[in-house]
Length: 361
Image (cartoon, rainbow, N blue to C red; front, side):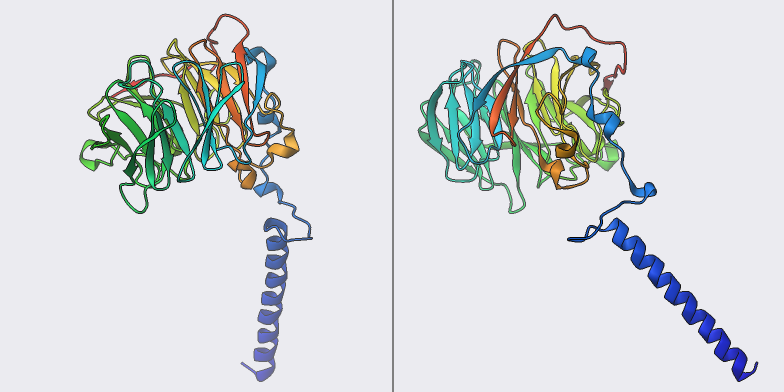
């Protein structure tokens, strides 16, 4: 081969690499956000959520009947006590309200509260308060007196939800990826949901810190498995009993990387779920069948541009939920820093669309 041929070949290779670099840079600029520059996703990377933003009005069977200003700079968690008092956590404090929204009292918390639960009428001390922080669980009497502090089980422990049964306190630990079971005195007596390959039990899949637990009317433990987009139930000794939920973007399914983000149970045994990304508060029957909608983004006061892409930081707008003895659904609004109270508009009526199915072990 002549020197001229070698030179021409090298020039062709260099030109090809130069063109590839230009194309690659152009694609990167279009895909990666840059300050002050156009951020346009190519069609292959775009995510059209317009059809998920709006909810069919015929599916919405609740209406907002009250709004309670929390009086906190940052709201983090919500609970309802046995007298239907409302508890809101944030700003290293717990703000307590009467059922009609009248302020009752405030309780100072040493750590930054991330979740809370209130002992019901069946608990050893109804009205006692359990607050999850990065340091563990702080325990208060019904009148706000600090009683005890249960330390975190490890350095990576992160308590994200607490639920109180008749004889146990359950704490969802997103760092350890298990549900911790405590005795009423604070003794750690079990870890629920650990992977068990021999029994084909993969454990909880928790891509983020959205990990919630709730107690049903039968005193059974329910835990969200957010990465699997489903809800699982367990016996007190930690055996997986059943699970339900489907992973899809339709109204009856759970959409995104890790949903539902929050879980609550109505007095009649129906489930209430809260999804992040595109916020949707929904109702499911005790068998895991889609029932109805409490509120979608519009009912929560969000415009489409405010909800944004579920993959961005706006997905951190997570709406905690709780229920009271009258069947109301309470929603903690982190944007408005308030509690929205939704009341049922009529008799519950399960739809035939999108029915789920409980699976038993």
